[in-house]
Image: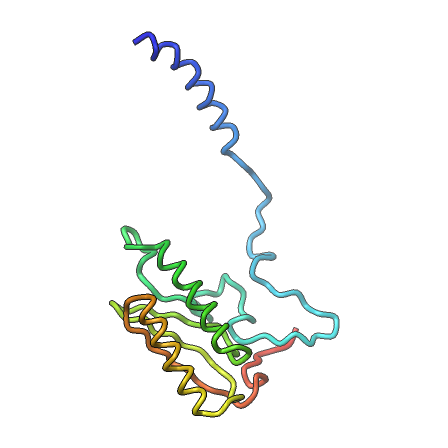
Amino acid sequence: MSFLTKLTPQLALVQSQVSKAALHTSAVCCRVQSGRYRITTKRDRPLTYEMANPPHFIGHRKSWNSWNTSTLKDGLRPSQTAIEDVFIRKFITGTWHALVCSEVIIKRQHNTIRIAGIIRQAISPRKVYFLVGYTEELLSYWLQCPVTLELQTVADKKDVVFKYI
């Protein structure tokens, strides 16, 4: 009991220091800078439709890049799902090097993962079919669930450009 009486003042001191250190204030920057692209002097930076809309238009004019239910209240595996999504995006951009023209969209439904994207027609169809099979097989093996690629092709990367800034 004497141990607790000696420890109580120290705990009160630590608690007061933590409560002071945990409060941070900053100026409100409502929809000002985050997620926006700077305008170049020559206005030669191409933007896709997804990139052209700022983040506060998610759900209105643009959609989420990852569709899953793990971030809902009492959702299962939210951190693992986020890490898997990052891994999938890096694997797709590495495997389909310089071919992906838009963002990689990941849709999770029950036990299946559907990956959508737009690629350029820079390689032969035979290589495209090989890469589709290769990607689906490896991701299915690593993630332990069926993976399906839903790809659309465009002749040139400029076909995806929405506007220049």
